[in-house]
Length: 261
Image 1 (cartoon, rainbow, N blue to C red):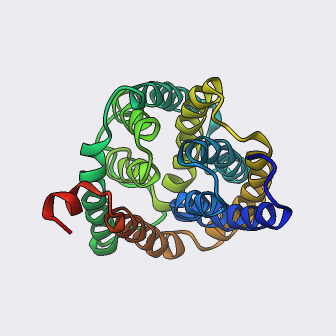
Image 2: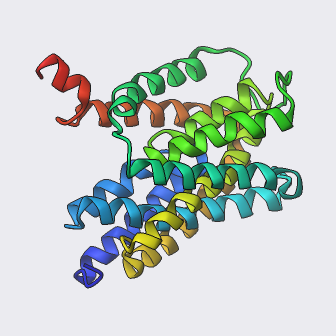
């Protein structure tokens, strides 16, 4: 399956570039890359595993870009990144044992709620606000929980990290976006390690897409740093709603099955 036709590899590279660009600003890059791989004829398990590999390049690229401009303090935030990584490993291991039906049913509605929160809440800007929990408590509880979710199921993890940074840690929109990428890097890498051990990763495809992700994320993060909350907020709302719609539109979605759609 690594031997895809050259035109398919080029299309996957372009899809990854677009995904990296969007993901570096508001998340939701998997909305582009995962369907692209499935359309290219890559089986679901290999698509999910390879998606983790190529996504690492995008979030690493974003993290580097944001940290260079001082929006991420790597020294102080690395312990949180480690907790996210541990959560990603646990989640990926649990994915082999637990059905994801509950998450599949609930996540679209949680994403809609997050979209409404960011769309309707006033005074969301780039300045930090009141912190509701200490960094230690935030890193020990919220971060690994979302990391486990990212490894177990995945869609919307970046939006959940964003919500936590804004509501609990008191970060402004740009700072929350920047630090979300570091945690995304941790939980993605943790889940990727599990998939790599099982041999499900298509390395050539993943590395080519990783280059596209890296370049797209560089461009997107620079645009986000120039425009801040006025760009991040609407794109985050659109990303959450688009992901919720995609999940509900799946004929295999539990809610559609329960309602007989």
